[in-house]
Image (tube, rainbow, N blue to C red; front, side):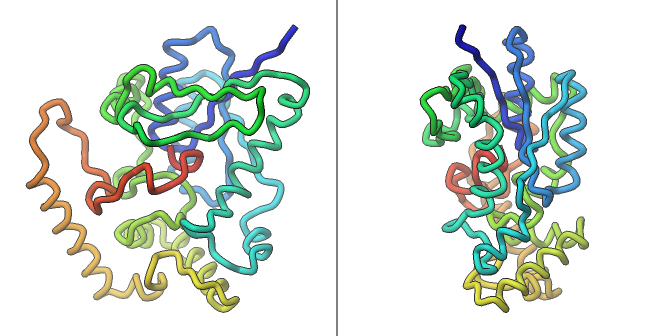
Length: 279
């Protein structure tokens, strides 16, 4: 008899958490295996949120750890920092552990159903692409017509809430994710100074090794965190936010939903960040 498994990746972000809530509520008959690919460099708030989500799901979220850590791969890539053009961190620390976990089952003939958190208001976005004929990818949020507001409503009604980092950052992922905007680096330095210092150390090692990339485009973190530069970044963000609010039409249905940092900077969410990292 053909075997089947159902898996759902939790990133530490709101969308995948809402999908987990939705699946528990609407398809409780499925024995879903929830997993989190842990790079070891995640925000502390992510782990707190995972614990809270586990309480609602009533089952553990399996941690998939890479067989080789960030330091190994940084050295393997010649001390070149990952960047939007070279996302070796996603490939080696997120996708590789997932593929190692499910490959034996796929090769044994098991059909694996993977549920991915792509919303209805993300028509151009694609999820993790199946690389094996026995893997089937499903997009329940999109199929149910659930958008960003619907995601937030799901989390609130389930009393799970949102990860605390959304008060200052737009996405989950590593503390030093290169998709962060400059205002997010400033806030990281303020809220998690020890993690910011680690990011500086990695950047210095990379620059000394000849890497053409810094974590934040156009300047090092040491330059970015100088008082006058911090003041300029915060002022620029405030002005952008005010302009966004003035030109945005009022929508009573969106009351209470804050603007994202990507929206403030006019960045398409689908173009920034990796699905498996921050959804």
